[in-house]
Amino acid sequence: MSRVAILKSAASSAAVKFLEVTRAHAKRPQAAICIFEGNDEKYYACRLSSILGQDCWVGINTGGRNPVLELRKLILQHPVYKKCRFLCFIDKDYDDWLINPDPERIYITPCYSIENLYASQMCLVGVLSAEFRVTDFNEMANEYTACIDLFQKRMIEVCECLLPFNIWGKGRSLMERDGKDIPKIFLNDATIDKLIQLDLLSCSILYDPNDISSLLKKSSNDDFCADAIAEATFSFENANRMLRYRGKQQIEAFRRFLAALRHDFVTGGGIVFKQKGKLKMEFDDTKDLLSELSQYADTPECLRRFLHVRRVEMEG
Image 1 (tube, rainbow, N blue to C red):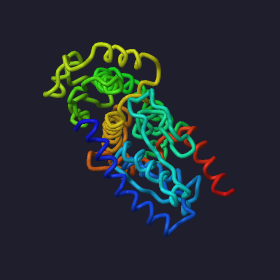
Image 2 (image 1 turned 180 degrees about the vertical axis):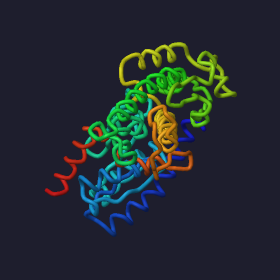
Image 3 (image 1 turned 45 degrees about the vertical axis):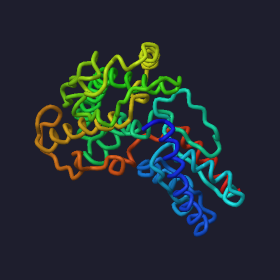
Image 4 (image 1 turned 90 degrees about the horizontal axis):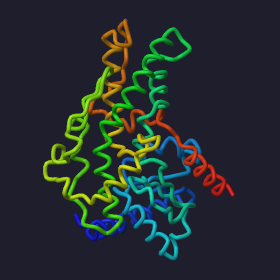
């Protein structure tokens, strides 16, 4: 789909969602209308309820970043609804150059997307404590240390294996930013099973890092601008690459690690756990990690500040 077609689609979607805004405002005029890209409400819900109050907000899911921004424009252009309370939540994606057009109403993730906030050591610590009953201060302290050590090692390897994929993904975004013909690649096609093989003891790459067609069959390295690839490569050279990598692949890599850890736990496999344990939570592909692990995911300080300021405004 061309950029023009995407924008037209976003405008159409926003017009439909505007009707939801009018209905929500009519039923709950004092509530903050929170506008999300899509499934992101599963992450934000508990944080909004905790800081703003459970009955102080309603959610509207638009299906994408452009529809969120288009819906904001429609609201602000309306003589009545421009006065209603509303907040927008969008992902930064690869767009490091993105400037927030409305910091008082729009929250932009400090990482690629909210999925990156799940694939973290702090999230793992929460899961270990609440689900596995493994902490650094109970009788499982040695196993806890082993889990953290394995996680750190595997995530370093994951970062190396996913680097070429993310360079191609960001290179495409840079070409779009610069008004160049963009490669026809669909990043959703690059599922984690095509990218890496991951268990507790190792992570290996499954595609040719020098040939995008080994991952995305209809693509070619020749489709990419050399300057865009160079800029993308440079952007990933410093720390915290995991936060700037595409989130869907990051959370799926985290799922694979948790699934391997669970198997070792319930079987007493001996990699970390010598004795069998019981664990209700599963991490297979049928489970929605955005919902299942929402309470354990990281909450950036910038999000806390954003919501606390909005709460003060609502109480004023």
